[in-house]
Image 1 (cartoon, one colour):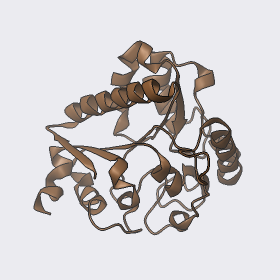
Image 2: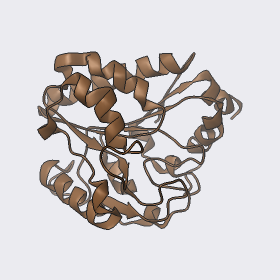
Image 3: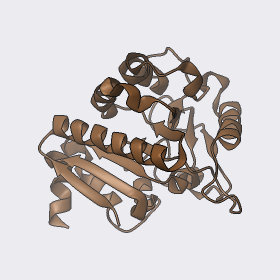
Image 4: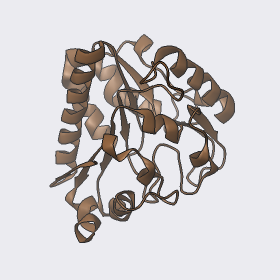
Length: 243
């Protein structure tokens, strides 16, 4: 069942989300040693990243991946990697060899293929005998006002990619830039835990849709709810109170 927490404001959400990440990292480290987490871009996570940057030794043995990326240069202002580097990776002193950047500059197809190979070579599946994507310990996600997560948009063909699919190229994103790389829905569902954070009244309708009946019209509703933690501010939670 989805774990849902509401907080007074965006700052409280960031604090709670950072605490959730650090607890997930500690649990994964205790159970498996090395930890694999994936980050997302967008406006919402920047403050959480900044709080996490002060965690010091908590980042030892953590491998950092990405849920999606725009097909731009690594230093482009639209790059998810650049945001994470400026707010978290550099301030926390995370070693570059433990940061697995999506190579957006290769384009959607070549970039997705390269990233899928790297994931499969580095991260174990939840069960060695089971097919499907590797099992990341935690994926941090935002949600768009249209209900998209990562770069999986409403009613996109990418949502019907098979269970073997790990990473996809996106060529016609409804939000600029049009070309992107994203983890597949199967990869999001394979994660041991997903953490979704949303703030502001503009996200209220999307959050309500996410918590409703699963539908490709709201990609976030297709996440595995038993493994999902949602942290909202009061503004984003307004529509859920009337359900």
